[in-house]
Image 1 (spheres, rainbow, N blue to C red):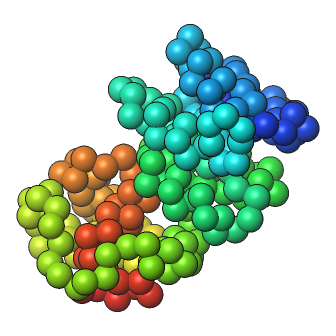
Image 2 (cartoon, rainbow, N blue to C red):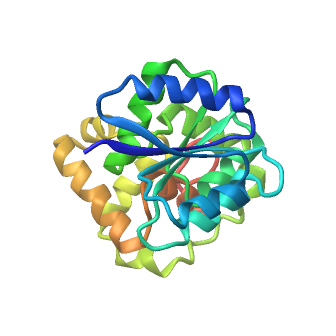
Length: 224
């Protein structure tokens, strides 16, 4: 079955370009488009979508609030934030709102297609290095008291899961975590899955955000 994609951007030319790229893929189809957040929410009420490519700067309702409203719904499609500038100030808010990742609008077509497939399969698409830079950039917006985290879900984590979570928050990939802890990648993936379940999170991007918000790690990658 094809991945059903929705394009949300107020620039018609950009939507046209993305549509042409996606239309050439045997496993994807553009099933809907919208020029702003209000229109996107309306269209989603009657159209089944798997992945939404979401611009952040739009009239009427911006991409962050639109993402928040979409992701608050049951069985919501995955949202991939598109930004014009690397580390756009909206990107962090978009991730907190429930987006599964973000990419630049001028990303090479192959990377965009790979990101859509990754998001559809349940993975996040923010590269570890980008995650580090993103959270270091916005660390002033996060708590920095150094106090013990106050998220009851963290208490349910095993020592190993907590260890894996801290490494995820520092921007390490599953492969890097596996090498660091001398585990198989499959085992690391299992730990990440259990962390998501116990904390009620959608993907590893939100694991990173939560770890920084609760003070489990500090900006720059240091564990508390």
